[in-house]
Image 1 (spheres, rainbow, N blue to C red):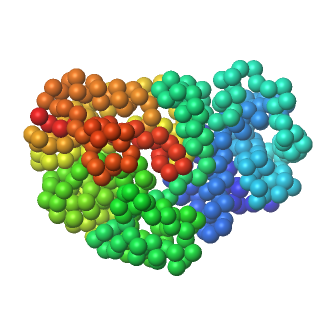
Image 2: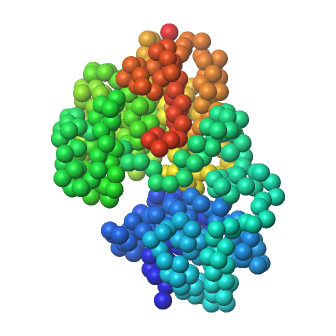
Image 3: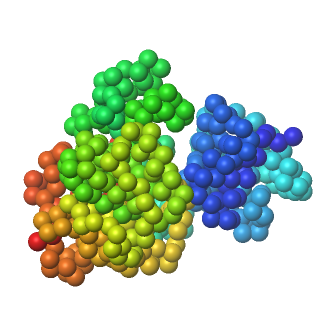
Length: 442
């Protein structure tokens, strides 16, 4: 009988690859369906995200070792091979015999016992050749780079053209593996040292950020959302780059602030804390369910200044006030957060081609709410220059009533010079890839 955790992961992998499911939502559903917790949940998470993360690498191995070639295999057989190979090559905790045995049982559970021999043969061949899987090498450099970084070459090329070959390799290498877990301490309810101490009492390793206030990194924290500290509203989960973006807005006590694409609300929460919960922060999103998540988060954190609401960022809303600060964290290709949502990198060039036009419309709409002398921040979680620097330059060309604005001293460690008005954070061991540009209305 197939192991239920591995079967659930294969089901989830098929849901993402065949039906366009989002990995985080798919994982949440399968954990709930199979009532997985503790070590089983951790194993399922590592296996699903890892198989997605290394998909191109695994597929090149399957194509080389499965005699019919990957194109002639059923989706279920491919999913079983991907999950089994990931265990063999990347999970040292799984014995080889277990990965092989469970792979054979999985394909039988999918009603394809005729493929059991193929599964067994491919996996055992990989075990024998593990030290040199491709003795003849690769036909092209592009094929090798796709194999090495499990990333489509067009994205590799885009990163290389923008950031140079060596920096691109660093970005790609850091897009593989588990991302860091940063949280923002809620200064309305506690302080950094007190919260860090509570985590350490639970044997959770804590690193306190040396330059960003109220920012800590947690290691081996488990399901942090089940912790008493989370339920008490002592923190919210927010990546380092997102916290930097929130500080770049320079929200002050008493300000009127608009966060136009706010879900799930992390930036709104940090800005409201910077406002000392004084003023009005309109935290807006198109979808009612996401607005509900923002409301729940604000209530848990005790942020009464946050005003969640439904709003279409593409349309001017006359019921919204002019604002001192406007954050436009636009929908984007997401190439800066690949390690969090690995399926992002399998988008085609054509699938993201319409994004710059959408972003331009949202940014134009956002600009209408900015008071004279007010501040507008445009941000994305991608490293695609067409969505970042080029988008910002085009906005300034369309809007002579706006000018670049210096970034605040609060994020000084990440600026190259005091006069910087834009910031690109590259994917590294600490931060996701991110872009932000600040403007002021003249």
